[in-house]
Amino acid sequence: MTSKRTRLTPLARRGRILDAAMAVFAERGYQAATMTEIADAAGSAASVIYDHFPSKASLQITLLELQSEELLRTVLAAVDDAPDDLELRVRAGVSAFFAFVEQSPYAWRMLFRDPPSDPEVADCHDRIHQRTTDAIARFLMASRHLRPPDERAVQMYAQMLKMTQHGLAVWWYEHQDTPRGELVDRMMDFCWTGLERARPH
Image (cartoon, rainbow, N blue to C red; front, side, top):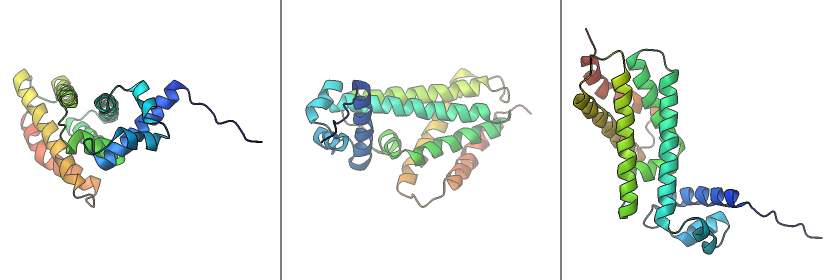
């Protein structure tokens, strides 16, 4: 007697597709990955994927949004849990960022390493990067450990912090034997000097 195969709910099927796409995109990159490969990894027909996502771009955009939101939540939680000291809070955020990147090959490659060529995906990338800059700027503006902040200067600090961190994530992808703690230390060596000068004396 054969047992009946459990039929996935639409939500569970969607989750399986997203997990499969994340693995395929991480291994192959967005351009090289095909919907057929993603369907095979998800154990579905390609037509089933199109029931949930109208295009490869929409699938990629959904993943980028989900991963960037999770990354931001992870970093903000680490910052909130850190002692009330600007250097320690910055270090906690940097450490949480690199821990997330290390544990998520998809985020590592698709958020930081492979620039998108699809216009829809590129627009999503731009929105994500702007949200990240804005989140860093809000953190700096709210800090009681900086001099009364100039909004333009804070935006510049935020952009520099974000680009330095992202650039180091790209470098790390090619030098994965480098311990995460070493990246955090070098990031702090480079960026903390500027932030420290902005503290009241």
